[in-house]
Image (tube, one colour):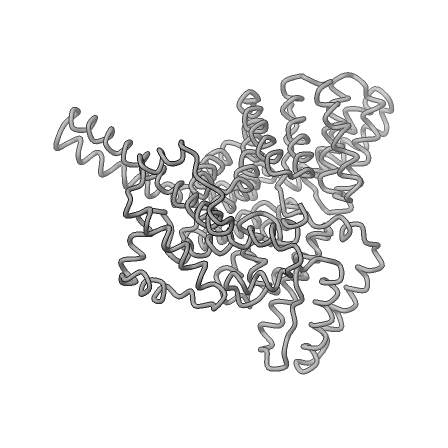
Length: 550
């Protein structure tokens, strides 16, 4: 039986932070206990100490400080959320979950709540608690769907697909990952697309369609290579090894794993290391090299047992009893008993029924709009007949195709206009780009987007980025501006303006190496570095400082 493996790509933290000694983590534990035991008056100073601890270890891009006038709920929310993030990065999922659940009720902004829900969902997933994981992932998607941001929606759908893969239900995962890829294409975010393509490879490998899985993982690797994401390229190679095993290309899989295992050991990414060791054990076992497979399975089992990841530990125990069966029967029976206990714990009937219920409810909501559209088409079929239906479908396809091209250009316009102003007209459009503009976007729409990009750039330092102010400067009403941007770009004006600010920040991060993250945040119209860092991290998959370094 083919083993199912799954890797959710989460934001990789600086190597220096992951390599810290456990003694420092104990210091952080003590500081958190002191904070939790302090009265409201003493919490502010202790909160600042905690944030300085994270800043010194390069976990934060800029310092987060609290004033005495700060509300205690806001202080608690920030301290507990960042504690959850920190523990998750150290793969201490029990502590990460504790503080994430404490922070969630205090989140007042939708963006903060979505971040917290996503983190809790991933933490439950790492603990193989799939029912809880999909519940929180669904709540996160609800918030992202309300925002209308295709990038964030695709991120949530990627998480949901991963949970169903972990729960050994790839058929359910397929619909979510395909919907996520469609949204990622609209968002035009290559970092997000690489993650989704990698997940699609996991899904189709689990479905037994390794030819399709290979196409997706090769495209994911190509994107990571073009972005210069060296470590993530190793993660993609680890995913590719699963596909090669499924295609019985064991020597190629072994070669890839010999490359990635040292990389995971070097940065201290225990979770990815454990998964790679499981894959190496399987590769060797398939080649009837049982004695060589045992140490890899044993190492993976120790890692996952220490992390509380019962799902992946189950794969390790199965590999051990299969490898030991002809080598040491008594040891093999012990591992077989262990495997059966884990299997019963993870895949009991109530958990399967709960996941099926979530899938039915959420799948219905996800496809509601498509179903409504199909009903409209059926009315036209009844009234006008088959000829009119064919004409209608052809017209709809052309319209949607053109609209998709226009929305892609709307996002490209941001980068083109910012580069044009920043480089003093040295960056010109290629002839193919010009033809594409003429074909899919009329001159009036192009001029509006260009003026808006220019206006936002001029207004960012002063912080006057209200929709009313921008509309007034463009000599149109707020309603007119919102309708036109929604029609052209497929997102709200506020979301489009945010993307302009973030794209401008990427230019500043590349060109102004001596400027602090905080100053760049202010130049791009953000009130503080924390809100800037969160927005940047969720859109591009890495923090501003990581982007600048790489």
